[in-house]
Length: 181
Image (cartoon, rainbow, N blue to C red; front, top):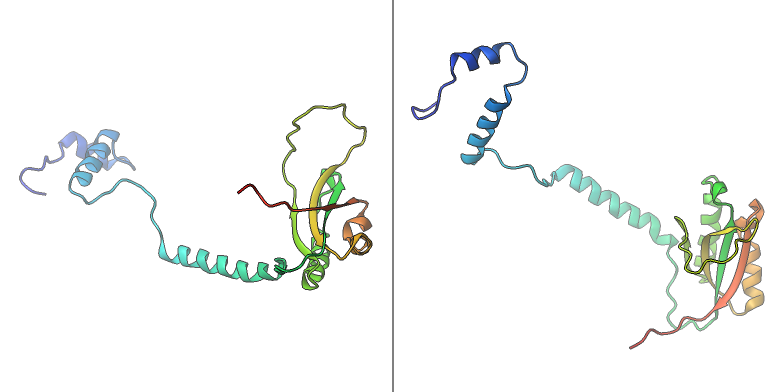
C-alpha cells in the first residue's frame, strides 16, 4: 500500500475476518480502484485460443464429412427438375431411419440425380385460412431430383425410404425461373 491509500478501518478488518466474502461496499471500492489503475477490465468477449482452435478444427472436419452429401454441380445439365415432397405426421419424425435416407440421397447425388434436399422445421405460417382437412399431413422434408423424364423421376422416387415407413411422397415437376434483373 502507498501513503495515499486508505487503510482498512478496524471495523472493516474485523468484518473481513469472520466473512467468506467482503462487505459489498468494500468490494465495490476495491473493484473501482483496480479499474482506475487499469489492472481490472470490464467483462467482455475474450477469445480463448485452445477452445477457438478446437471449434475451428471441428468446423473443418464437419465440412469434410458433409461435402459428400452436397449435390454435384452440373451447369450444362438441362434435364428437368422434380420436387419430391415427403409428408407424414410430425410426431413420428424419428432419427432412427436417418442413415437410410442419407444412403439413398448419397446414391442419387453420386449419379447426378439429386440437386438438393432439406428438412422442414417449425410450424407453417398459413397466409390464407381455409377449412382444415381432416387427417391432413404436413410436409416434413423434400428432395430436388434431376431426371430425364417423369417416368425416371417416378422410378427414383419409388426407392425413397419414406415410403417404407408409412409416409406419403408427392412428386412434382418444376422449373427454376431466373430472378428479375
